[in-house]
Amino acid sequence: MIFDQLSEWPRYFSSAPWRLAFEYVLALKPDAADGRHALQGDDIYAMVTAYESGAAKQSVLEAHRTYIDIQATLQGTERLDWFALSGLQVQTAYDAKTDAAFFVHPGTVGAQLVLRPGLFTVLYPADVHIPGLASGAPEAIKKVVVKVRAALVQ
Image (tube, rainbow, N blue to C red; front, side):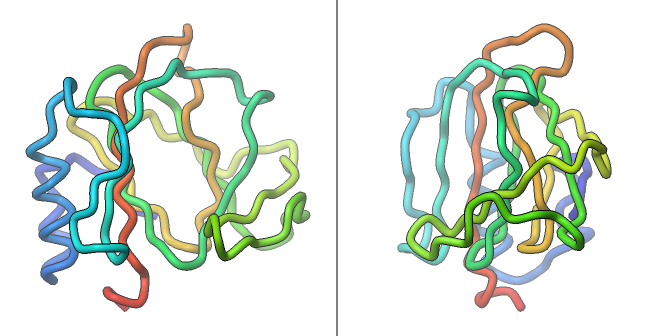
């Protein structure tokens, strides 16, 4: 997992797939159209969504295998809880169609990140996470998640 200011992304990445993904994120405005946006076919794509942040008890722990997530809020502040994969109990086995596995909450959180405009996190396949959590009172969130096929950058 990486968590930093968007302006610092070049400290971590230099290859073309990362450049494409981060340039897209940096160009987005809060009024960006919701939906799936192909950047490089199915290898790199973005999902822009608007929603209200929620409570942890309404959310599930998720992890991916095929794609690496770049997550950033365009509007609003949300909390993302992170968990180490080791030792977690599988709730729903990995499904290749959705590129997701779901896990039972272990009762303790490994780390809590607060995402607000200007910050980003990169979540690798071993980074189990709960996104979309309220960081205080629930609020309107506009968010982008760019999916980068892990095989492109490893």
